[in-house]
Length: 293
Image (tube, rainbow, N blue to C red; front, side):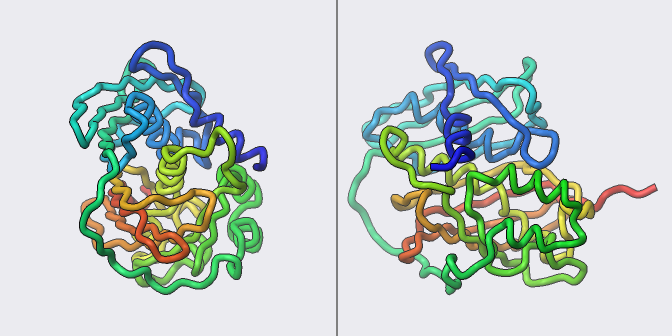
């Protein structure tokens, strides 16, 4: 396990300060605000720590309410909404400076047998044949070197590889609103940290990194890296269908069905390398051209 992955695991290991109340530290991502995937992942950790061990997360629905301050801790309060025979529901509110910045509802289920079918996995090249994020980014002359290094530092815990050029690498002409990314943690998860909730939490963390890329592709925009888009996540939903490991390759197949009114919608499926549909994801975000003049 590399140092960056250990730092991420430490970031997700919340301090319990009272029953149903947890505190998490924060750090900046690429922009001077708390990365949305971090808040969602920490909120899911808080919820999961109030749930019986035989219940596993099967869905979450969340709203990003305010920009988070990376210089201040985040307090997570958990409301134990329901404890049924098969399902457990929790509501979590993240607070900074006395105001809610994020709200999440999550549901957990005891394992049971049931009907079985899935959409087939789309075709994608072997992830080992694709350039790493560092190889791609350091090859772009149009992105300032300091921006490249901040970007790579923020994602150092994750090995994330685009199948095609990312929006910030090849922009100017609209493309099909479809993007594929392979990802896994930069290191194996062994020992005490290797638990089912952690893999779900790490996938939640990564899921906010690239989902709106397909919106940018549809309009030939490069995003934050080239300064031609102002954006932020608005809401986020995930359904966890089958067990998976975040330290093994996962294919994030993403598309955007629509954009309108300053908002863009991304939807995606996450598959294991052997073709099992593990997660479905939907997110809407603010996607605007910067104001001029």
